Image 1 (spheres, rainbow, N blue to C red):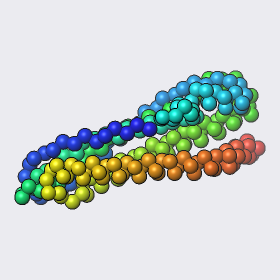
Image 2 (image 1 turned 120 degrees about the vertical axis):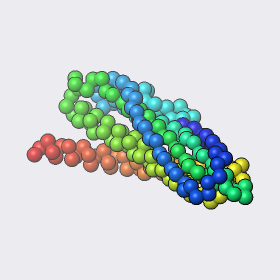
Image 3 (image 1 turned 90 degrees about the vertical axis):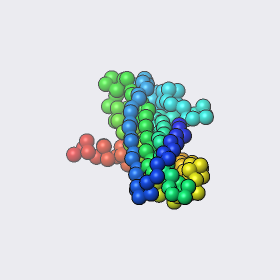
Length: 203
């Protein structure tokens, strides 16, 4: 996970009636890494060997979502020297890193079924990480434009930076909580999805 700091731009215009404005700019991209193998054991080893590394560790995962928050905050000086947030524009880019099995067409039916189920679950998991990030990008914007005025623009900037740190820490906790919940239910979820596919094939 990569989080870029929010850049601040001070607008020294006296316009006390201007309302706070928020704008979210969100983009998403995909990157794939190839894995080989013919058996379920091969797939497990390939994912462990070629999957993306978690930030700051040597652990590899079957998929990952990189997140980059950035943006601009504009401040407006009011009468009496006080200052408020005039607008906040938060940018979020998420990059989903997903596996691509090169031997899918040559694999046994049972192994292909396991892979199809697993790969869909990996993509669903990473898409949810991206959605959590989008939710917090919007929360951050609302929090920034909702800050009450401070005695100066320097104090307003400090308050905005503090609020940004607080919201992004909550974002990190939400992402970790999601990972913990998903990890705890992985085997049960896979078993249920595989059984559903098998039942559909029998119909």
